[in-house]
Length: 436
Ligand code: 4AD
Ligand code: MG
Image (tube, helix red, strand yellow):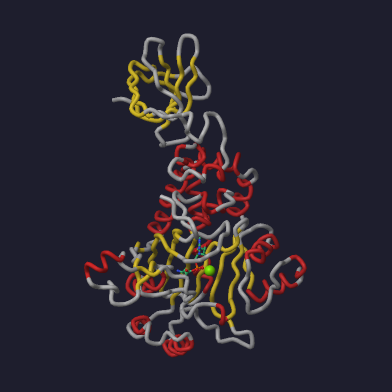
């Protein structure tokens, strides 16, 4: 059986030529030792090759084995002159971002994608080990779960619509989902603990280093829970367990980031794993922020959403340990959040998890299970006729419940120390950019 891969390095010496080939399974390349009689014409950095030979112990310290080649076949030549990546050069994430069709061929981005794949396995494994049922919530939906109006509406392309003589394919306006939460709430009513992990979409026009128009969200929903603490415990365990899983499964790939992309990140991650996450109420958080009012561009005010600069300040205030902010103002959270029925500063049982370098990583809440309170809240939001099915869930074996959503790309940024969210997803989509 031949060995297949792409050439990462060519070193021509007097007698022999050394090739390093890589098939994407790990950061490590296999060294090929090619005798002078072998035909290696046209083989350059980036070529796809197929090689027959014998695997032997390597005399070199850097690798345990090497392949003494008997036959080398050039499968696909590479115009290495025009290839935007150069042999032996370390390119920045920002530079390679310009080439979404080629950047997976660099060491750093292939490491990132292998880590992303392990991280995905880590989340599934956590939920499986803890008895959660995986639900495929729909991508196409007729609801705006967050009520923020950041929806992408979908319609058939005009030609298809003409053919079908049908402008509204589903008869009702339909959208790409912003969150699978409401569908999970349906399922928690039969399976107790459920989760989903898939793409979500937001038509947010924010050009920031932590927003995408298409991102992946891990969402969990738990029945029979009356305390935000239960939800926070799952968030913290999920974060810590997935991170330990990734560190143990992909040490070399993670090391590349912790050594070259974000020096000091290894220690920061260790701190997050070692310490208990902190907790602040929203009201306490506002007090803390107001004490340093002059630091901020946006004034921290009770009743307003926390800005990224506020979130980052709070994380630093807590010693760079992730911090839960709990009990947000009633008026700034969606209709489903459970009313704390307190006052005069009226709050709901909602929680955000803020992490170093990113700010908000997770958002969650207890859900309003009391029919009368839910109905009046829906009425307030002008949603009375939209959510009859959601109200009905409160009439057929309703239970106190709650859940949360974790932004998968922000999670990867957080553990790897990657500045820009566009560098942790294979094909980033954001306003004015939908390449490929
Ligand atoms: O806080 P959000 O909006 O919460 C929800 O959607 C809830 N319905 C989830 C639930 O309770 N099941 O979003 C959850 C997380 C955020 O904390 C953030 O990490 C991420 O999703 N997120 C984004 N990530 C990248 N780009 C965007 N535009 C994002 N918007 C939210
Ligand atoms: Mg949020």
